[in-house]
Image 1 (cartoon, one colour):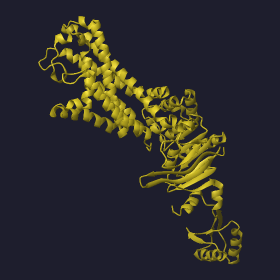
Image 2 (image 1 turned 180 degrees about the horizontal axis):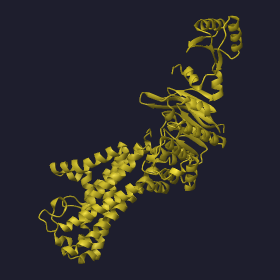
Image 3 (image 1 turned 180 degrees about the vertical axis):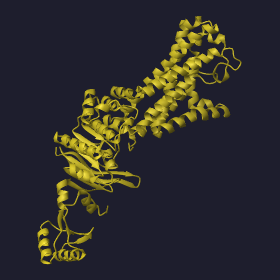
Image 4 (image 1 turned 45 degrees about the vertical axis):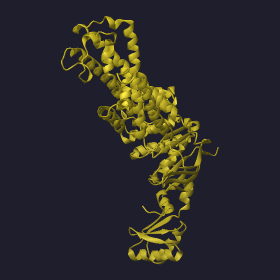
Length: 263
Length: 301
């Protein structure tokens, strides 16, 4: 599996994908976090969906990584797109047949690709965290935010747990992307259908049908990154996401290992 | 081991469509074996089954004495290019080979050797998407050679190549076969296989029509005598002479083509002279592989 992992990384490290994705992740996390501080006293709000995040909230131990948490959903969709594209492209390029000739154990190939993409996702989370925390440290003094609590042991503990949750969430999004990529075998279809479901349909459904959001995969995966919300616990989100991952992952793994490679 | 690849009643069905129909053949060691048939004859599906990419509906095959149900046992010794070269467009030729080298645990030095062998060393850093079709084919052959294979399976390797490229591939395959590699090469370009293949497996509509030495197939076909006389009347008379001797003939492009053995040439020449006909042409032609194929399948060009 190590050979598959290293082989996959030769593809992941191509400049357009590696530099492009990490650059976008870094830039967007810096931008979203910067807006949190720049719009601090604006009437329109400074958080996601017009939420007002006060100076006092930002001064809490969790204030250090608040911008990073706000960016978690976008990180998830980026992970989903990368996992789906990297998997489905093997079908559209016809390269899967080359890979299977050199590594006929299909489950080993799949596992190696998955672990490689998970490591790539970890890199995006770390780069995003560096960008977000870095700009927070730069902008906090300019907005007269007390940052004493940011350097407490509680803050660091929360940071580690938050990093872990955001990473788990990104992996969950990525796993769904990879599964859909295998099922549909087309990067465009995989990404567009997945994103349309998570970003549009789930939004509409959760607004129109009361209580439905606790059953929707995108909502549950986002909640892992946010740790919880007032209605749904972290454990519930974790278990619900796991059920979706096992279902999608099981279907995709079965298809990948059994399906004829005819393209 | 007399056969590197041995297929027995290999069958693949897609619903009601029988893509490969109880195909049986043996591929000898150290030879170039052509896998001949028109597009849609079942060549690629057969090759995919041999490589473990497609599961047979029935039958079985063995490569290097390993069952194709366990591809991990023989694929480390097999090189393959299936249905044209498939690579990552945004990666360079070198990087594409390194992806596969890493996967198969082959040293990068091997990549450099192969890039030189197929004449791509000077374009190794160019992206695959910038390659010409001929360069793509050559990269595909390089990828197939990565494991230093005992068996090389190539599906339509000369597709899209110019005459010089075809000549290069032909020489390369001969060199590889002479070094002991058994080569199984499919093509719908029958004239190409006629030149390079020692053995042939001829398929059409999913069935094997012939397998054996190329020379045996060609020798089994009757030669033709192409004759020209002074005019239409002479051709008419020559046709009568052929018919009297028991040979069928037809006029094509102002010449009479007689399906007859070479020995009839002298007899025909004498009979024509006795009839006052001066032959302006008497040519013996052997059927090409393409003509033999059409004769076997009963179809026409």
